[in-house]
Amino acid sequence: MADRIVCWFSCGAASAVATKLAIYENEGRLPLVVARCIVREEHPDNERFAADCEQWFGVPITNLISEKYDGSIYEVFRKESYISGVAGAPCTRLLKKQVRLDFERHGDRHVFGYCAEEQDRWDSFLDANNIDAVAPLVDRGLLHSESLAIIQDAGIRLPAMYGLGYQHNNCIGCCK
Image 1 (cartoon, rainbow, N blue to C red):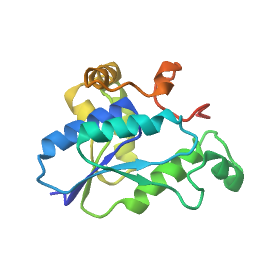
Image 2: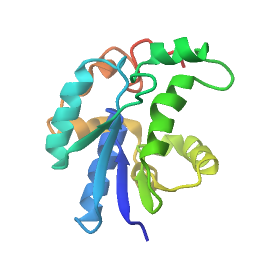
Image 3: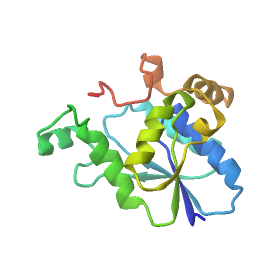
């Protein structure tokens, strides 16, 4: 049994819908935190989207940041001398995963916004991480396109990056 639920909100539509579902399902039974790893190079519209989602959630968002890198991909690139390659992008590992590891506690149940079409990515994530984690969208068979529609149906304008043609709400000019 989990002691606390941590919803990892990335300012993407899928993580917003997964968070909303987790809040609804929890019904206040367990302490619940909506956590966001700040990356400075994300589109500035993410602040508006986060505020809109926070109101929709009815739960405050806890903003976390890598102090070592000041939440900046450019600081990661400068200090690590590496941008991206076969091992992936260090910015994701150092600005998101490491921040998550530093924040999590034993007994947490983690909620992530993987969509139904990302079952393989979700399975790989579970294999690589020894944590109690759930993906409500995968469990319900919800596609990314359905997450976008749910956000819009809630009266929330999607983040600007979607309007710029990005499939996900990544950093501007994502190196992955």
